[in-house]
Length: 118
Image (tube, rainbow, N blue to C red):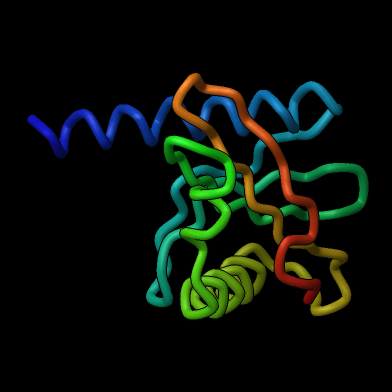
């Protein structure tokens, strides 16, 4: 049952992240996208930008932010490139990578452009 609790906690965290972007007029393009390089939690169009979002839920925002490793960032960037190719976007499409941290009480915070642009 522990795995099931983590799964539902992850879904709730992704919902909280999606609400952050929706409140700013963001349009959800995809969720839990699987590619050969790895998974992207959330993809949102916000204005002209396509935002690839990594969602991390931990007891604190600091612990959540610290849980995004350099190796994971590389996988997400590669997965984003695969998604962009599959979706027919050009290499000039403005993109960024955000991290949304969700703490133990469910508060979501965004770290915009958390690991650079493509």
